[in-house]
Length: 368
Ligand SMILES: Nc1ncnc2c1ncn2[C@@H]1O[C@H](COP(=O)(O)OP(=O)(O)OP(=O)(O)O)[C@@H](O)[C@H]1O
Ligand SMILES: [Mg+2]
Image (cartoon, rainbow, N blue to C red; front, side, top):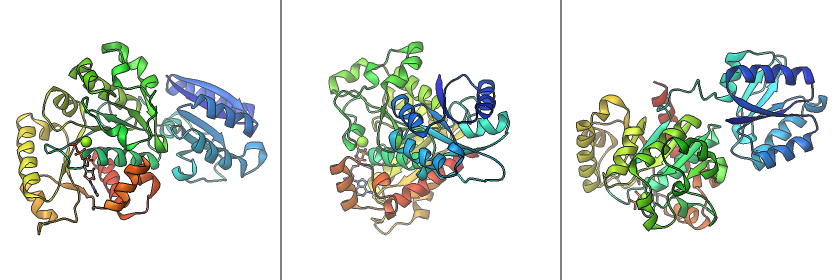
């Protein structure tokens, strides 16, 4: 069950919000905090999924926004909604800790929009994306982690899942502590859902990570059906799930591709990469994927064109290109060394802007 923290000093407004929240979704509502410090302490320790912050805390206009900003820093995974009145419009600014705005008095529809309700999300599969490439080393892991961060920076709730059970490498791009849990700690079947929140590790920018087993021999402890189960559970609780998918089309990869709402096929301009990507598309056609879900190409290291064009690649694959990711060896090396996604540490760099474009294309596709 998601938790919502109310930071609101007018009791009648707090009651109104509690009533609305109670009607739209099973939420555990806590708080009703009035003092900024107590509210911040609660947000920091509880790390609720949702916080509703009064824009006029303490009767002043600046305290609410400051509290929002500080909650963002202390608990980046919390979706922060600023509550205001029609006379004082506020625009959402996820970078400043305002993911959504709720205008009083508002109704159920408005609160659902603001909290990004699970029940009213696009559908159980709409938000899951498998990042796949038949050829190793194409850039899948780098794309998975940086796309997840780019989506999160827009205020969406994001889970990144390492679907590579043996030698999964998402963890190596991030400052994952040794005690972080992984998919191997989850119970199978119906019990997985309730245990999921505990198994997630919160990484930079507040992205939730479901890591692959830390040791290669543990890969055999996770059945392919459970890998797919995890994708579906994460999709039901996050706006987006991005899954790093193994290149080998075994049971794990097929389970992820089946469960995913969208497939991103990572390809470079090199002839072997295009040829294998084409073979993958043929396999997808045999599996009926093209009829059931969007498949978009992402060109990795796209400035190394070998004389090819985007149009030629689209023609060769029979797929639209969602984004072209340029090569940036310096920033990529730095980001690996510092274990920090570059879409978080250098959001204005051209490579990060390409991820922004990819996030836009993905969201546009999923809205269709
Ligand atoms: N846009 C880029 N700019 C610079 N270097 C890149 C870029 N994309 C990928 N690389 C390089 O390619 C390497 C492979 O990337 P990555 O590990 O993401 O590929 P992968 O498809 O996940 O590989 P594997 O099949 O081994 O899982 C990276 O270590 C990085 O050095
Ligand atoms: Mg990889």
